[in-house]
Length: 167
Image (tube, rainbow, N blue to C red; front, side, top):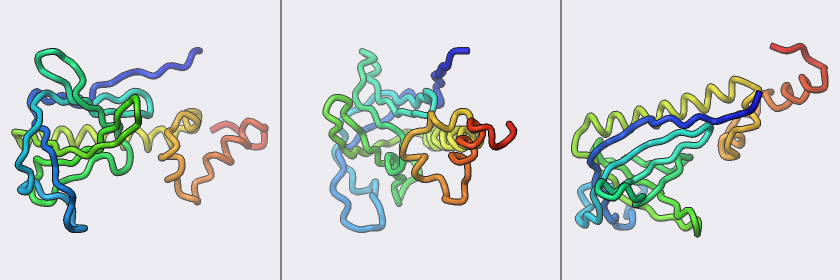
């Protein structure tokens, strides 16, 4: 049987706003009330493909990609003063250059759905860790975060050597 990865849309929001954010002045986090310069408005889509997930900001009129934020630790940060505002770490796919932008939702429900989509992705990664045949397809940042007490890699190797029975 051939290996394949399916693509799943976890969230679509028709209207989001992107802001240029000032540098963080305290360790407490970003404050949406400091954001004054809106630079873009369009739609947001969160797409998972296998063990990868990306947040796409897409122009409503042309369907052109404005920005992409791969979902990994530190890629999405909640603002301290509003549940509808987030900071995204976007990555240029050609140069790998990173930029932090402010993301605002018009409605709390849209922000809630965005949060749920990210939590669904995190749950699916944890499920992949539990299902040993897919462990080799996990992203490196997740493999590095597996606790030392987890014997998955050793068990996987032992199974192939015939030392342990299959589950």
